[in-house]
Length: 252
Image (cartoon, rainbow, N blue to C red; front, side, top):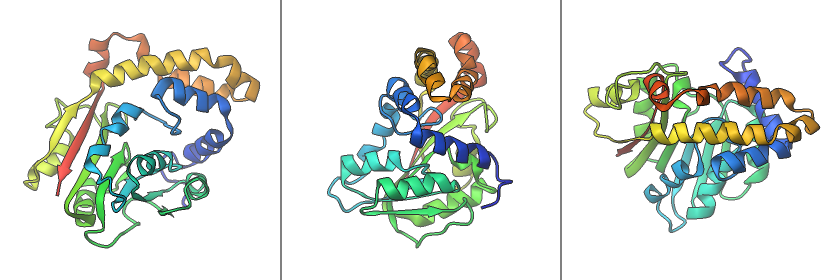
């Protein structure tokens, strides 16, 4: 894998830490409601919003773009009985996913734009803060829709103000403009306020676990969590002026 890829080395280190650290497990449980090795803003309530779009008879095939170590997919499988597929550029993440979820699963090490699947293969496709890494997001949207079965659903958890630039509202994001330009209807839920509340929980959880991170020799990850939650020191109006979070739903 190309170490020049954006954040590649950081994510290799992250997934090594997440595999071994009990402090990080406890952080995820406190901040996100469940330990799915989250690095971002996908708490359990957001992931639960994906479940209604997945057939629960055990026949569904679900793809997670940028699946990390597969824990979110494992949760989806436990709740729906689905066959789970995921790809990620992190070698450490994919190795962990394969070991944790060996049954009714397929995990591929690879990048957006390199990995391909047969047409009309998935009942649901999920992107949790991963579309930003597409070299051509418009082309990738076309590929996603090709992979979806007729009647399938694409769900994107989408953040603005960090990797992606902040725009005016849910209909002016890069993703929304791509969908609109192709005449593709979408639904969108603004969860910016929820994300701010989650940010407060993340900072509180990190501070409460400072000594546990230190005892593990993981004080650098504690400091990283504090840096990631710096916005918690701002009031919500200031936060929402610079950051936004949405859940997009596209039905094929």
